[in-house]
Image 1 (cartoon, one colour):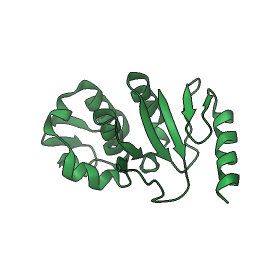
Image 2 (cartoon, rainbow, N blue to C red; image 1 turned 90 degrees about the vertical axis):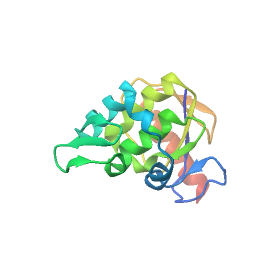
Image 3 (cartoon, rainbow, N blue to C red; image 1 turned 180 degrees about the vertical axis):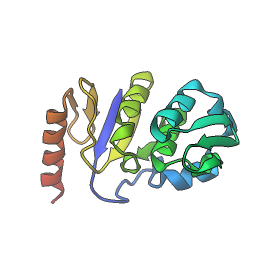
Image 4 (cartoon, one colour; image 1 turned 60 degrees about the horizontal axis):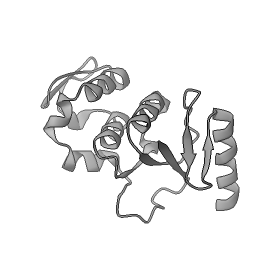
Length: 154
């Protein structure tokens, strides 16, 4: 299940498993074999419109041939979520185009992320808001939970 910690603060999680900067974490920790995975290849294509040719070379329609480190921050965050689900990834590095993939990863494994904005997840969904313990199923419910947390954090 997908679990979300709602927080506007930039580095506010005091947890050794928290990845504040997915870009930096990915640069120093990704493994080549991750790029042999079909879900990784699909996410890279969907989010970055790029084709994984090999673990060392991605074909980008804008940048040409690039190394995995040059992928977007969003797709790097998704890959970390998928390959290292015990980490709490700062999903604010992701745009709304990553929402369906975050849900998909959450269907495959228990996943906890930190989110500082109202990402628009496609409905219906099952998300546990860790701040309150509520399980929500609609974007409207997500907005209500987000608002509650903002009031408490003030």
